[in-house]
Image (cartoon, rainbow, N blue to C red; front, side):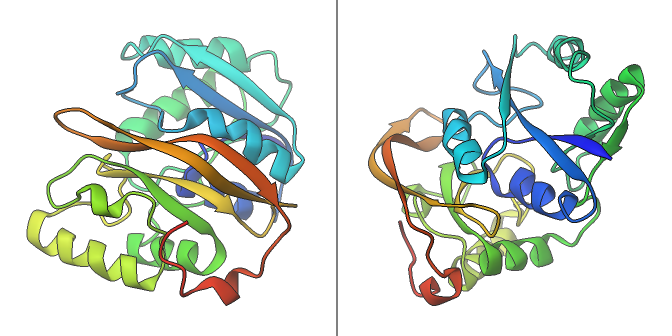
Length: 233
């Protein structure tokens, strides 16, 4: 099946892509740019980095712009996907019925399949798989118990333990699917090269703190298993 993967650069969409690639032909990536930084549907933190990720994967990428208005942005996505000539779309949803129903609506409208490789997976297992396979860092926090000390930290065993403690105290979703935090994947098994941030800044408002990548370079592939001690990029 020829599929397009909806990618934000975050761990969930990238893990879904990796799993989908095992049984489907990934013909392109689709990156969604919302005018609303607090979009109801779409990850927006460092979304511009999807260009670099496409280069790392050596897969074509298409960009879709949406208004960020609730429900309207879903219709806008469907309007633009209709020209792609694909058999299915791949999403990174885990348990969000809000997102699943709306992506399913888009797929049904286009007469294609919606593929959700992570759906109903245990969130701790997802985090453990990300920590083993990816170099993924936290780039945005917006929940009680998550402060700026988490920004730039790699998702490894130690960080998962920290997040579990925050979950116990504040009830966050351990995988951040409720918007508690967002991530960026710098290296992964399908990458032909890695991304190394070289310049960044912290953006703050009353509710969130975000690490915005301002400059980066590509580096030769490294063995992820040899980097387990690295806690920050």
